[in-house]
Image 1 (cartoon, rainbow, N blue to C red):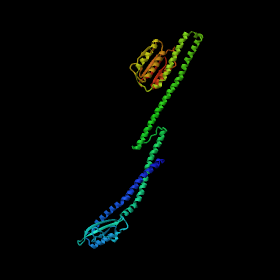
Image 2: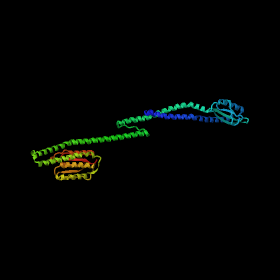
Image 3: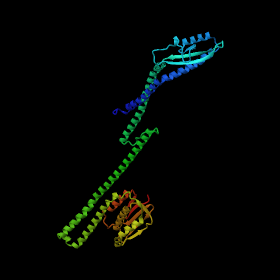
Image 4: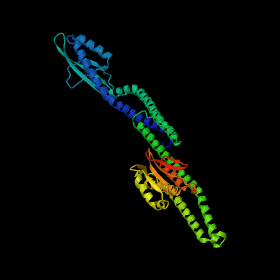
Length: 422
């Protein structure tokens, strides 16, 4: 039974239950019917006795005897004129059809009193004697087999239809869940009822939608991880050259100074060059290390006051600003930006650093708000050598990380604009 499929299993189980119920009902009918049949016969004799007595009332005794003989010969109920017997005795006639060998004889007697045409009163006896239990069983056996066959046929049909409907639901659910296993995004179970089957289908649909959402979120996170990995790869690939070149130059200068080769005998001059190269390398390394924090700078957005963060950054570069005698024109007021505070600090530091490095001495750095954009603008010093672009690279990646729009305008004036109202 455990190895059967659902259709034959449910069909057999349902048929067995209904068949057992039907058999018990028929057995009950078979056992209770004789008692019921006997009660019906009593009621029948009672009614017939009343009817015949009423019809014979006021007739002559000869007429009554002939009428009762005729009735007794044509019916199972026998009728007689009671003779002078005691009230506890019954006169046995030859035509009573009593089976003296049977132990289940049933005797039903009804007595009625009527007046003859002469005014004399007589008593009539109506007697029915037969093996009522045997008759009832024989009568029940005439229709119970047909009833039993029809009931079993009906049970088989009901079992088949019921099992078929259950199987259809299961096949439908299996077919659609196969599509769901193949991640068909359109796969859904059709809900056509509010019963337990309908609730099960709705729950499967909800579960599948939750699964699709989880898969979608995982895909987005995987894409984000791949994007960050690509950013790192591209960054370090570009930074590799920027680190190798000054290191090679530094090594050459130091070796020539060591062996007093040519112009490198003047060590005091080239020690300053070495310090500049070390400063340049230090700046590059700091920028490279800051890239490690990019992937962690996410989902930390808050409303940040631009002016406050800008003041902290400008304070850090105060010495360089005074050294080049630069003028900072800061028009930022109480504007805010929805971004991570650490990320904004890194962005402002790189933009201010670039502006200070590539602006004329005694030049102007303009910082302000234009429509929905925060901007930093400075005039380019053509005599200043171009950098490696790591600072702007980090700024761009941070802004992309927070999905913020920005614009870069290069020419006589260099302008970097960030949209702060999203």
